[in-house]
Length: 272
Image 1 (cartoon, one colour):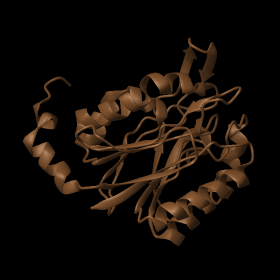
Image 2 (image 1 turned 180 degrees about the horizontal axis):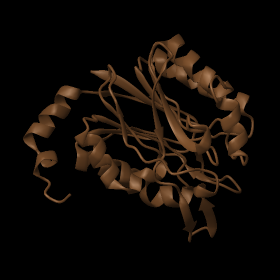
Image 3 (image 1 turned 90 degrees about the vertical axis):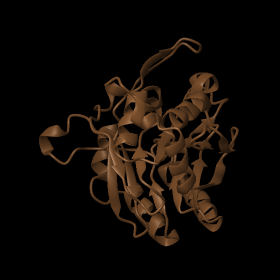
Image 4 (image 1 turned 45 degrees about the horizontal axis):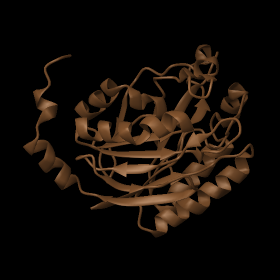
């Protein structure tokens, strides 16, 4: 049995304050026994407009990257560090950064980086708000699965949840735990957030961890919250409402293996 945690945050325009709150809940989750902790999407530089400036500041050892490494090492846990705007390594690829989710091991080392593939370019009809992530970010291209002592981690971010083909690729590459740092809008989150988490869990017979930003009554950009941990049978192991905090759940990879053996949908699919 392994204990995993999702942290839910509000985010503010002050990166240092956001990290201070995150540190509190990372420590609390570690004290509860969590070995893998997942943070929400872009909570550090919440509502930042100049993503290029942040990406430049975070190249190498920036404020957030140093914080994540120190927290993972301090608490001896694996950390999915939400997302940061980060440039590619090659200088010619710096017109826009990628929305990048970093994975840290218990020694504080960056061991994987996933660049968000599906960008949220959507007009939310219910609220009339328009979102266009591709104005600020480049599309990633590569699915990422990383081995860990907790199980193989398939990485994704927020809007990716609407694209099941990504998660099938992650599972085919060995993923057992699918993580989704997110900032789901309140309108789309109310309609689909937990439904999507449970669907991705059931169709891939995998654990799913959705760590979301919360603040449903935010005057400009309300986010849904509702962070949850789902088991491979679609059962909700732990969930939150619209408050900051964390949830933990025990996962059992032996049970996951048994479910996949008894219900071998991953072997039965026929379409490419």
